[in-house]
Each structure stands twice: as C-alpha cells, then as structure tokens.
Length: 284
Ligand SMILES: [Zn+2]
Image 1 (cartoon, rainbow, N blue to C red):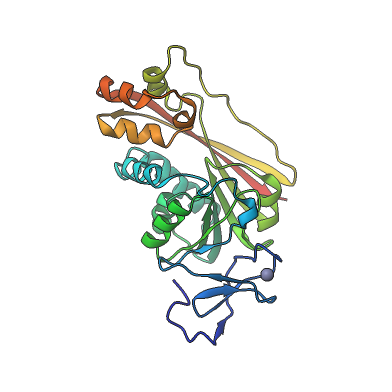
Image 2 (image 1 turned 180 degrees about the vertical axis):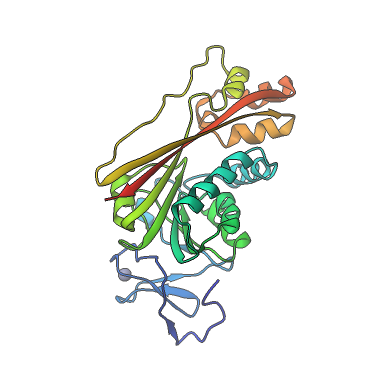
C-alpha cells in the first residue's frame, strides 16, 4: 500500500479518504502511519491496513467475525457458489458508470474483501476504500488486495470523508443511512445487497423444523431516490464441510443451538436456493 517504506519525515498528502476517528479531519500518510492535522496518528499494519476503530466504540476485544469465520467464508466464496451475485454486481456498476473515468468506491462492511477482488473486472477505473469492524477480516483483505485501501472501522461511525464517494456498497452489512448519505457525493449511488425471500431455504430446512421465507426488504431512505431492485436467484448443491463453511457466514451461526454444525455434517450434502436482491439508490 501507499506510504510504506517512505522517509518518515515526509507527509504524503493525497486522496486518502480515511478520516481521524478522534477529530474527524482528513488523514494523510506520514511514514508508516496515517496522521491528521491535529497530530493524531494511526500506525499502518504490515499488511497495509489501519485501525480506525476507537477503543471506546468496541463492545468486545475482537468485534465482528472471528478468524475461523473469516476463513470459512473465504473457503465458501472461493468455491464459486456466489459467482452469479458477483457477476451481477459488476454488471450493475458498469451500467451506472459506463465511462472509464476514475470513480471512488466505498465498501462498507467489506469483510475479507471477496467482492472487492471481483471488481477488478469493472470497465471503469476506481479507488476503493473498504472497512469492516472485524480486524481479522480487514487483515485478510489488506494482505490480498493491494490495490485497495482498508481500515478497521464501524458502519455506525464510518472512517470515511464527507461527500467523497461516487459509489457506496453495502453487502449484507448494517445499514446506517445517515452515514451512507454523508460519505456519498451528490448524485452518488448506493448499492445495498440484502437476502432475497428464498435465500438459503435449503440450509434452513437442514437446521430447523419450521422454516419461513425472509421478509422482502424495501425501504425508502431519506435523501435517497430509489432507482431499482435487481433480483438474482439460483440453486446450489453444497457438500460436506462446505455446508459448515456456508453456515458460519450466516446469521444462523449466532442464533442456532450447539450441534448445528454436526447436523449439517450428518446431512451430507443439501441443495439450497440462493437469492440476493440488489437495491440501488441515488443520493438526491
Ligand atoms: Zn485527529
């Protein structure tokens, strides 16, 4: 990442869209740290990310996904089961930004960066700034996607500059509309990916006696114009340990009683619907 190995006395001012979590002013790079005009300094980790999560905002020592969850998630996604979603996401972004001009993208709740890696096939040039509350996830993303900039931070108090982004992504992360509105430029787009009605029904049938469809989300947000809903549905067969990997990246992992992973292992393969809705909004 930018800045490593530079003379520590030299401040590199650039289009770094991260802000100081203490005073909210813009961060620039000095040596191996991000520093603000009030001299608050944040070290750049060797993988290239910066931790901008204030200690008082942490509700536990290691908030967000654990290392085990990050690795499970990565193993599942690299199996290609969600390729129909990443393909559609790129198609949507290409249609919103048909020119090759450079745009700025925020990935809010970026996890271990899987979707960011897939954006490399976009038609447009871009600078990407991603953050997630899980340090383990951000460490993984920063180690793998050197072209992107990563920070540990919260969706509720985003470590990103005001009105700095052409596009903000939220893929299954907490939606904090005020923060989304703050970081987007006027006429910027927000893509919010939510689970569709039938998402993971087959997995739920393995876990629970009674299963229900997900509620369909359709929310209007102040300051945003709703543009479109793009639904993507498919079916996948998940075998063996891959079923456990999938389970660990769902909310059911936190809600289901012990022994659920054994249930999945015993079931030895299941078929499930997968269904994302991409909700597209434009900032007025
Ligand atoms: Zn500061």
